[in-house]
Length: 306
Image (cartoon, rainbow, N blue to C red; front, side, top):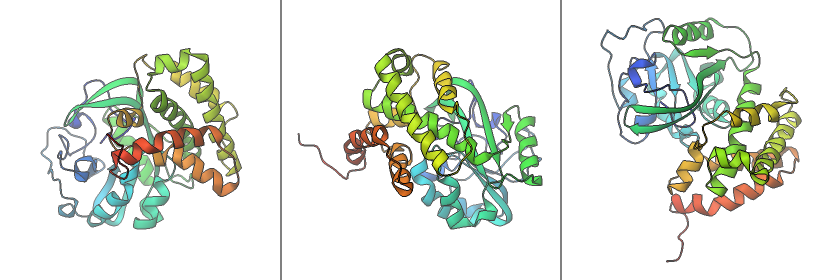
């Protein structure tokens, strides 16, 4: 379920979340990351057996799909989950970035999608075993238009009964952008420097670079009409100060390991969305351009000479 800085806690394995999906669905490609479907929102007992599969086509008409793929896998995941979507099914995306709701809505319909996010620093120890490395984990979600709904209330109750902190922000889109501001600034500078959080926040130069990247995102959000607090950057830097010294974002770890990353959904998205509204984003543009060759190499789109 956790594809990025996402919801898990110390030593959690899959059964410890509300999931009836028990251990990770599979280590098989996309479906291994397709999180899990809650076949009944009130079914939180860990003693009853639950079906598991790595084939979404075998799972029909569920109540909710919790989507934990990487941001760049959303399109593929949306099409793969079509057989799971019934008239009242809804999807909770937990990706880094700010485009998941719109990407899923385009495939599945707006009525089937919530806004959502998670906050955690974690990594995969082995299939089905995620190590929590920072932050008190929480999940936040809500209707995109911020109205109250029975399905949001039921999902929150399910998470709470399972022991996971679940929040329903007054403005879910602003909450998604607030996390985006933090993670894109941290990920981009971390990936370029290959330095962990303790170094990035203690060196004046790298701290200032992260702050500048975050301020560009804050300006972009406000230009797009979002109500982020004026101190959103200070809040993000305070969160950074609370991380373990060796913490790295998942995008940074992926780039350092020569794996495809969420670059296009993070710093790349800042540049692209900035152009759409006429906002200059020079720091994020520098981060994106600096990392793009590594991203293209990881995707076999570019060969480096020997």
